View 1 (cartoon, helix red, strand yellow):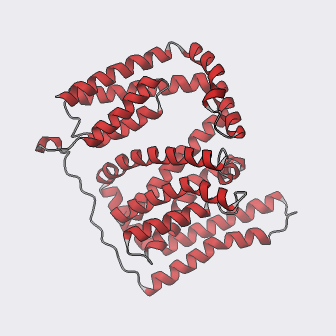
View 2 (tube, rainbow, N blue to C red; view 1 turned 90 degrees about the vertical axis):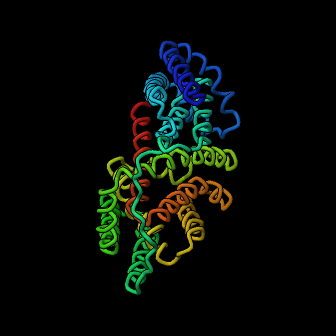
View 3 (cartoon, helix red, strand yellow; view 1 turned 90 degrees about the horizontal axis):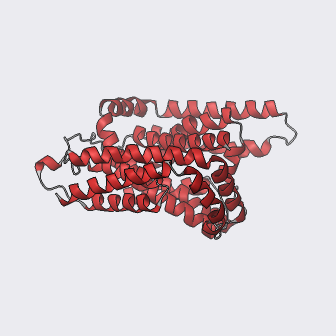
Amino acid sequence: MKKKIYFITSAIIQIICALNVLLSVDEIMQTFQTSITQMYAMFPADFQARVFNMIMNAGPRFIIFTSIASIIVNIVILVISIQDKLLKKKGLIIALSVIGFFTSINTINSLLSLVNFIVILCCKRKNPEDFPEKKEIPKLEYEKSSAKEIILGIILVVIYFSQFIIHRLLPNDLPLIANIGITVGFYLVVLAAVIFVFKDRYKRDLKLFKENIGAYFGFIIPRFAILYIIFIVVSLASILIAGQGISKNQETLEALPLWFSFPAAVLWAPIVEEAIFRGVLRRFIKNNIVFIIISAIIFGLLHTIGNESTIFTTIIMSFPYMTLGAFLAYIYTKTENICTNTFCHFFQNLLAMTLSTLLFFII
């Protein structure tokens, strides 16, 4: 009963605060003009400039969008609380609390969303009515790879990493159209090789994923919410320690034409990188902890090595990628279904690229 009253009260307060923000957009923007410099003084200069430019140009639209999102999130929490289904919908409340935290413009909503997250995370289900309907994900066991699968896996890794050699062999004065043609052709070859090597696994895993999509989503969503909190903290810490706004890998991706970078990040990368960093690697490493650690390290370093200025910067800026890599490997160990971590990778990149694209057009 106490939890129900708390969440109802919290939701009503956050809705009122969000409505107040909607009615005070101009005043908030005036306040931001004098406080941005102080708020981001500890961050690198280039990062400060990017944040200032983004806030002052996209600020009003962003405030309206996040306030409406906050209102919707808290209306859903309010309805669930009134229906007394907080524990039954625990996973959804966790996800909504994280969304509420990142869509909060004012301190009150941020603190209440954080408290919501902590409270619901600590709540224990005790009574039968507290538990959601059982939707268990299929129990797939680790499969020992055959010699053929291992050989094909090694060939796939060689093909993937040959991109670095090909890149160095290309002449600097190569016409742009030829460069684009070679790059696109290589990406298509790698994608075809991945599908060929994993065709049987994809056929089985995709069938299971579609048949049990509710169970898989119920497993993925709460964990994704926790990942984002950890990811944001690690990313901010990396920026502060490295003294660099974003990784060079991200800068390179943003510099590419949208028609190429969007499908490459949202479609190609989830399929190919999950096959390489999780699918192939899993065939050689059965121990879950060792697999997660090695997969995270390789995934993180490969997204920054050769792009950053120093070894120190490379390592520090790889931590956010390592966090994501560890999460994807963890999901794979729990499901042994390559479609689950491929979907997570797809969703993460889709969200990042969509936000990046929207900010590009707004600014």
